[in-house]
Length: 159
Image 1 (cartoon, rainbow, N blue to C red):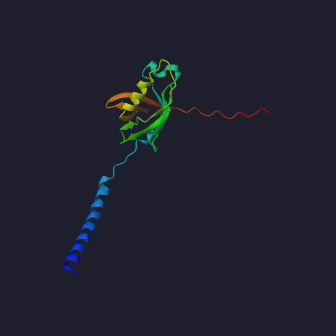
Image 2: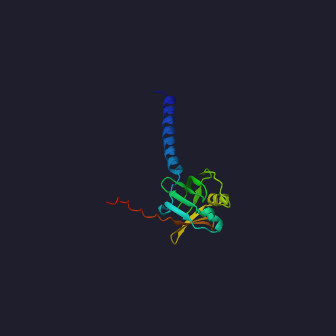
Image 3: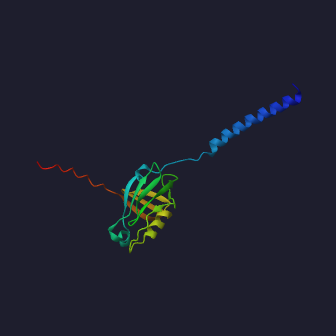
């Protein structure tokens, strides 16, 4: 085998080995760190109204959070809503603006304010059993765990 051919094959082999090492290093470095929100956040929550306008029509906003799927659903106090959220670590959260809502009219209720606050939220924390959503250090929404009413026993026919 000629010296030129040996030199060429050695260069190709060296290049292939170095490319493989670089690809392995890149794969390790480029993988994002994935973390999930606190599992305590999962479940059904009911808004603690900050003002009378939060409960117009007798409906209180509710949210159900699915931590495993990063999805939420519920109601705004007027319309149904659902969407996704992203939690970067154990205290930061961002709700997607690709939220789906129904479009019923609710007189006297400022639903857009509620939705805007939800979309601005970037942090969450727990305090005394409450789930608190905030924008920076400013608390904007407080939620209490929604109690589930015990199921009524089935009526048995009188004999």
